[in-house]
Image (cartoon, rainbow, N blue to C red; front, side, top):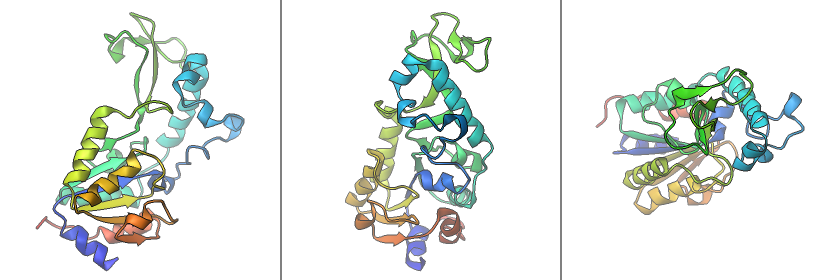
Amino acid sequence: MTRAHEWLVNARHLFVLTGAGVSAESGIPTFRDAQTGLWARYDPLDLATPEAFARDPVLVWQWYAHRREIVARAAPNAAHQALARWQSHRRMSLVTQNVDGLHARAGSRDVIELHGNLFANQWFNGCGRCPIDVARTTQPDRPPACARCGALLRPGVVWFGEALPAAALDAAYAAAADSDVCLVVGTSGLVYPAAGLPSIAAERGARVIVVNPQRSDLDHDADIVLYQKAAECLPILLADAGPAH
């Protein structure tokens, strides 16, 4: 912990990658664990796809409304807050696989959201000329439609089978390549291309620190692995940021 803290304090540019483990400590269930109550009989892999929305947009819209309600009740935890404080004093690029927006709510700036944002919307097969404000609906439990072309709004997240947003991915690659310390928090290292970002940082000479209570696929390439929960570890690891050197 002491050596990792020293690396962070002396970092020119810290690159941070966060995953579901950070949000879990705010009480947000993982993708599959969210399937409770009326939704227990549905497989999330059968709902979070373009094909599912095309087949039954009302069902998918209602499922995401349920997820939005869960996330809206959650609050940033000590890990989110520690990262936001650190960024207020030092150069840090924050990339997340989470769609809950908790990093921004904690005060982090310019968060690169690789998988989109749960509370954003975008058009599904729209005409390309429809602003969001022309969406209309008479039934809150159904996706609003474009008043011009009839296209439906969908959640602004990346579904299975879809590519990550190019701008976010390019920004993440550039930040990883420019960093000299990479901090990976709460991710299994199984989901690509996000899982490849620490390797990009390491190839450019960055030291890699992994924080995760369980072993991950990124451990063998890390310089330091801290088997701890993010909300317990990060406030200590990122303490006393102070002005940058």
